[in-house]
Image 1 (cartoon, rainbow, N blue to C red):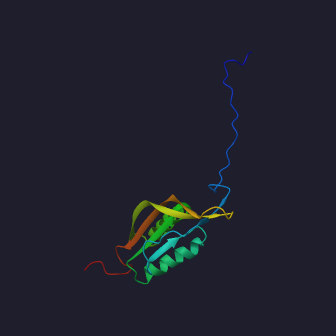
Image 2: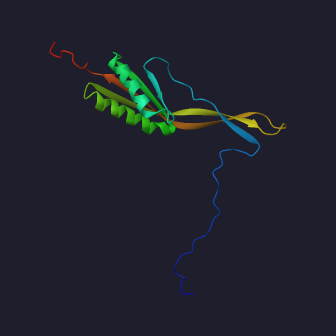
Image 3: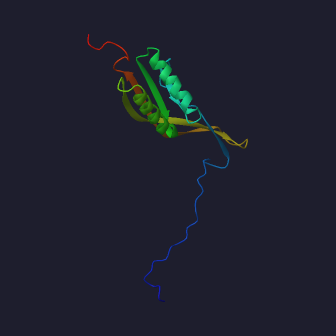
Length: 145
């Protein structure tokens, strides 16, 4: 009776975050659609070694590539931003970055676990980033032309 003024918490059962839309289906994730292909287009992932990605970008920029385009999706956005900033620091004022963000539609296939159900698909959305790293001046070039 002394605790009448203290609001009591209602214990609600915790909902499990189940990735399956239904127990009767297995979800198979498709690869995302790649926007463009080329030697200067790099897709950043969380699985690839960061140093290897950084070395690949540095090699492209030092061999005369005028620009590279970095694409990151979902959890790789932070790594993509970090990579672009590291390139800007390494090339000390001779390159700049241009950033675009967006949303990408991803399709998952629903495969039935029983024979009496049909195949299906579901669409989900994921954040994306596209960073253009371009050279503004070449190192060692005569800038007094």
